[in-house]
Image 1 (cartoon, rainbow, N blue to C red):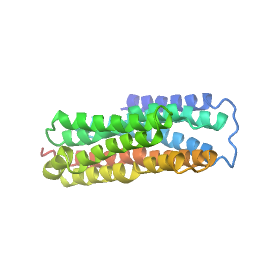
Image 2: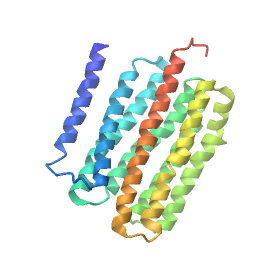
Image 3: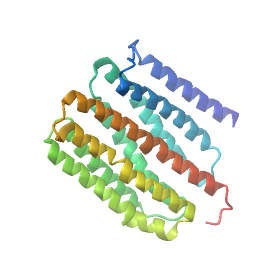
Image 4: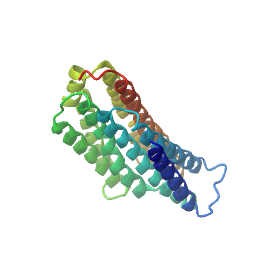
Length: 260
């Protein structure tokens, strides 16, 4: 146990060192609220990563993968935030490529969490995994093509929204939602419900930000700042809070006599 905690401490030190190394001496201005949000959230992601990895040692075996994936989500996001904040502080430009590379890794992992928590309590068909992954990729590819300028913003927006709606259908009315409703204990039902409401309302920040940034004709500089703050704050809910929900149900279920 001491060795495992030590390895987590080493990870935290390594992430902090990497973060410091990427600063390059740039001064963060007190009125740069976007830059401040990048710094705050990158550190919060580091803290969440260490917490989730340490907590994997306290939950039952069947919950370890879910909690490990939560830690991987915040780890990958933290590393990308180091680069994104450097791009913003140094250039004032939106780090579109870094953000989408982050999302292309972390968002599918978040969707896999629905499959994993159901798998921890019952047998689940692999189709749930693949449908959630497919919907996620459609959503992200559509958004990236629009923001990066490969296709017109409206078609890209429609493609991204189609992927999101497909995900919502699967977790509310599709097989994943049905398995949760019929086979999950109350604690898992509660966690599943909170997770899918985050996907509904927390993820809504992204299309709203996209509309503000690209579709309503607001001044480009102003919309860029608002877009980045919206995306950064959304990641607190959609990555850290999402993982905390999983940690909570994993801890509660691990403390119960294992009846299933």
